[in-house]
View 1: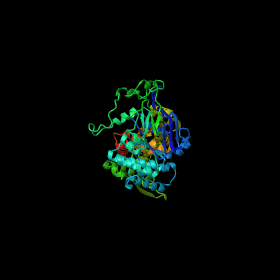
View 2: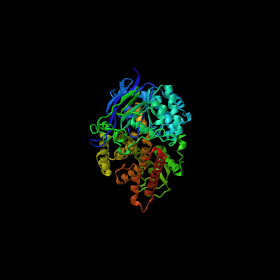
View 3: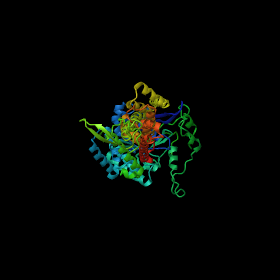
View 4: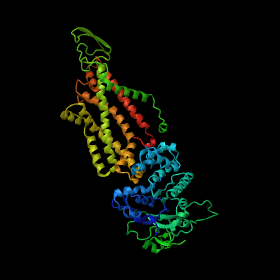
Length: 324
Length: 295
């Protein structure tokens, strides 16, 4: 039996929009993360990646489904217990500048988790915060500035430091590098990797950059319109993927030598018929949600929805006709 | 380091206003210890004496001997022969008390109501904002008259009545700013660390809305000093013989053609004070970096 730190079962999140209309942001998503593993979550904009992250953070709570964190169901525990557990799972936001309180000095922002937990006295808090700042590469002088005086990369480091102050076991990174320059991206990714080893972190890494995800993660989950299409070990992502949507995503990566080296020939994508999660009221569409854009679509795809099934150990696909 | 970022060097208007405010406040506090004449002593021999009038008077001292007492009316006397300079200084107390106490009441209650409304939304917000709209729609002068009529005139009642009237404006400022921050990511981050609602409001939101609210409060200080003047002018303010700037202007209006200085001195002092507070408010508002949002 593997040691599962986080186990998400049939997670569903609906948002009410107007009268009797719902957006099915996430429907029936299940996945697990082993202790020490990094799972990447990729997909196009609006497919529900961030919603999953927030649902795990219980903010807002999911519509249905279960989230087991170290065996405890976060959707069922009472508020007091949830507050006790919160330090153990932390999140890093995409927009690093706006995730820091503009009126607070960096040192106090980094020390804030300790204050909330009520663990350390003020001097101790400052000492620990300075130590943490040093370990994420923030100069002690910078610690007495305010967020708007810092660059985006520095703010991202501060955010990481703050998340790690609570000594979490699970770190959810919601597109931590997508708002940064490429050179800074590499620095932050290396920093995350170093800290992951040092603190023994388990990570859920959300991104839309497949190259980043492949390098950082042990396993990659691909999402489309609120559902998981494929979960594949990252070494198999480029050449062992089976779902047509994964193929389409990979073929969208710009190629530096398109004529000489057509590495990922463009899959035929029917771009005209993209579905919206608004329409996806149960019963209205029984078939595969990717059907409208799929090049392999057949009659079966309209009638029956494919379930996520394991084709190899660690490789799950939700497609009736998976192939390479 | 943080200061170096606010590269808005205070100009002469800033130094003028802060000097004037400190001067006026100090004088108001120390009025009892200054070598001043009595503010309610009426010298019927010298009504409407022009500024700088020097009088000598024969009075009996404690031993029954006659001595000459010298008095200088620095800014002249009013229609009842009371020293204008003394009355101006004692009037500062009333004007400053109202000018400062009313915005503080608004700041505290309006801040709490606005934060609750902006943070929790829903029914709390609906009820609160409806109440504020009712207060806003209520004619202020009628409320003042009603309070003066039922509770009697006096500075305490005046402050309470004006305080109630300014709460809605502060509530709106606080609510609008809270709305902006309540959904922001740093508030979510605090929540995800297990911070409670009260903690989020005090540690995350309050420091961000305090500066726009304080800027508004400073603007209101000047306005309230003027409102006190208007109310005293109408006879709704403090009662005679306690001096207030508005009351002094009202006294002087009868003799504006013969002795204009009686109304002009308090008007000028009031003008300088209101201007100073407004300039301070402007300065504070400019201090808020554009990145941190403005009023």
